[in-house]
Image 1 (tube, helix red, strand yellow):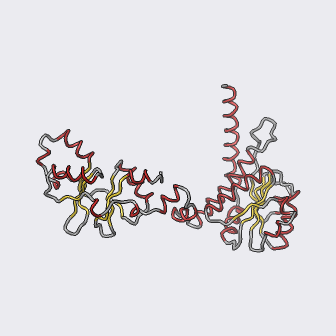
Image 2 (cartoon, helix red, strand yellow):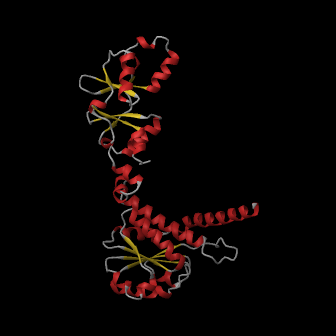
Length: 321
């Protein structure tokens, strides 16, 4: 089995080296391709045969998930009617290791007739496809990872990485944000975390464990127990958050203070506690909780007035994480 692991390591190393070498092959055609897609008023049509086609489908999925309208067009199907999908304001992206045209010849002819720009992810620079493309991108590799240097492995990975490079460059150029991503991924947990507001989950009104500054420890524990949020909070006369005391603070205090029952809320409260605006998204609340290792987070309005308390368990029950 150790020999098989060694062989697997060699495959991974070969493909990693092929990908790393691509960085030095990038030229101004990459910038031109990004600009062309940015200015495209239509769709990005991606086509390729065999394994290149499978890579093309993944690139299409990545483009669409980041707001670049795209679809995959099988070259053989194009020859039997699907060429009608191409419009003059589209961009055509062809993927091929060999650069031989074959079924893609008709795609190029139609693109030229309509004035559609052609981007090529090509594994052979001395080829018809590379030479005929408006923006050829060099995806050549020194060798495949298979022992016979035949099965598309390194070359497929290279084309995939070039597609990712285009997608991320486009994402950065368009300042594509987390909110933009969430809009396009409403069905996934990450998308929901970026869309759902804290106000949809926090406890409010009579459910809030609020105590006055002169509340005794016994009173604080009674409120903490009855409200079942594992904490009590203190506010000032303007209802602005001024402190928090959690069950964790209580446990730590019993270890250090012999007469902690004689202390008041004002004496034991954690001043200037962490908080979040109620209109913020759940993902932001999670980030604060994880960073500071806390399970309760007060929510406030834009002026710092207490609105509610969100508990980590509420988020976990929602199955957003």
